[in-house]
Structure formats: structure tokens, C-alpha cells
Length: 435
Image (tube, rainbow, N blue to C red; front, side, top):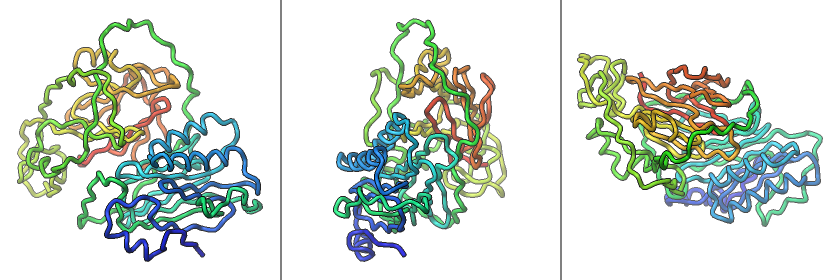
């Protein structure tokens, strides 16, 4: 039996369905009974396992962090950063928990330990679990969804941790919760959801760490001079602009940098203009509407019409962007040229020569090398290579759970959905270009 803790229950949810931009606090939440804790604040939801009737200091801090983030605006990315910092600083064994909060038009989720998040959308489902992760798992989940359920494993012998329970403060006993937003949008709704008639198959589980990389060691600072000029940075812009139709009218135009999903714009390190990357010419085929495609594609990557029955006349044309790089903080960059990613990528020779753009990753722990990894476009392929980094680069192809180390300076072709780990940071390569 579940308890509907949402304001007004199903009737309230029905009224909200026609109203734009509800907050998380306005969506009905069904609590699953158990010996853990479910905490619901205005913009943050938390379920955490409890091992006894008295709360530990860490358990209390988890609840306080979620309450604090909700009070200060409920930014999901801030919640992820605060929870990651809390776990990194504690020496105690953290309890299993799952927390979530809105992040722009999406939902930021944080899963640790024996906890699981189930996302159902248009007939498909995705499970995000912290069971096989050495640390934690954080994701951005596209919104709206049909159903979102978070649960933690329980200790059958544990008693309810009643000390922290306070119905007025939104903290009740429970082992999980479920949301069924029924198409409601989150906050500003910056992402447009386009429905079509094609069925959506089951979503693959995100990769989890099945093999541990070698222990990370502090990096040795090289002796390169510091007076080689300011690094060139790029600001993200909207992934989907005000006029989505414009991309269909001129598919061969050079793409702009993509928007960070964060509400806080990425600061520019300099006012210098971006590197003027020369448009690459490749062989391809055009659909009957004139969109330029990979000659091996079965469907047009722009309008989706079939290319199978069409006479394939291979012609030379300007290569369109091959996808995006999406960082673990939600920022995204268009793949319309080569990138060098690292702590100080502007020092790389290809960046200095104007052959690649620098993509700076913040790294307070010193686990990322100055020029850590390169992402290069070769024809219609996206290749990645480790630049001889101190701590290595690991990839998890789509649908796989094992992190595989890259051989330094050896290029590897990656497919859309591949996740890349460098130091303590990750990013994913995503694309609509499919053969």
C-alpha cells in the first residue's frame, strides 16, 4: 500500500496538468513504506536507508544538505556538487540514498550505494543504480517522464529512524517514492519534447564501474612557461534555439556551441573570438530534401526519411556537426571540429596551431592532465585518444558496464552514447547521426 503525500493527491495533479512550469513540490509523491527516510522539500526529494532508530551524523547532514539546497533555489547541479563534496569528505560508510532536483528543463539525480532509480518514458525504461559504482552515480534525466521511482534496500532488522521524522518538515518513514508527472514540465522548460509515431525501445542501463582504474596520484606540474597567452574558451548556447526549424533549412551551415543545461552561464576566460576552424569537406549523399548525410546512413539524420530506396550519388560537401560532447555538469559542446580536453588544454600543440579547440575542465584534485584527451573528427567518424595523461582515460561504450582504458596516443572510434572518464570527471558523446 502506498501513501499519497502530494498536496491534494490525484485531483491536484490533474489540475496541474494544464498548467505550465510547476515546481517539484507541486507534483504528487507516493511514498513506499519502510524503515528508511523519505524527505520532500519544495525542490528536492530524498530517500535514504537508515540502520537504526537513532540518526547518524552523516544521515542528518544528508537531510540538511537537501533542505538547504531546496531553500536556496533547488538547483539540481548544486545539489549534486554538495552531495559529492559531503561524501568525499566523510570517512564513515555512507548509507544508500537517492536524491533529485530540477536542473533547467531536466532532472538531476544522485544515486549512492544500494539504491536504484527507475525511469519510464514512452514504453521504455532506464535503471540508474549505485550498487556497482565505486563512488556514486549522477545523471541528468530528460523531463517530463511517465514515471520515476526511487528505492533503497532495507535492513529487515532496522527500526524506523523516528528522530528525524517530522511531517511538517516533509520527512517521513519510507523505503522509496514514486512520481507520475503525466507530462508536466520542470521549471523553465528549455527543452522541447517532440512526439512521433516511432516506438521507443527499452533504454540501456548506464555503465557502472565494474573494474577499478589504478589509484589516482597527484599530477606532476610540468615546467612549461606560463606566458604563452590566455586560453581560448567557449560559451555554451541553446542546444535547441528559438527557431528549431532553421536547422532543417540550412543543415550544412557551421554549428554554434551548444547550451549549458545549467542556469548559470559558463564564464569566459577571455574576450578573444573562437578559433576559426576551417569547414571540413567529406563525401556524402543528400536526401531528396537536400540534407547532407553519411554515405552509409539508412535514414536522413536531419528529417529522418529513408535513404535505402534512393539512388546514392556520392558527392563532396561540408561536413555537418557529428554530435555533441555533454559534460557531467550538463554543459554541452557541438562536435563540428577537433577538441583537446584537459586542465590547461591551451598548452597543447594542436590548440596553439589552431587545429583544435581547447575545452577546459575544472579539476581541484589534480587528477586531470593539462592536455588529457583529444576528440577528433575523421570523415564521419569521431575518434578519441589519450594524450599521455598521468591517470589515463577510460571509456564505456553504449550498453556496456565495464570501463576500458585507452592506450596512450592510440586513436579509438567511439559511437554515440559512449561515456568517457578522465580523472574525476566524465562526459558522454551523443549524436543523432546513426548508420
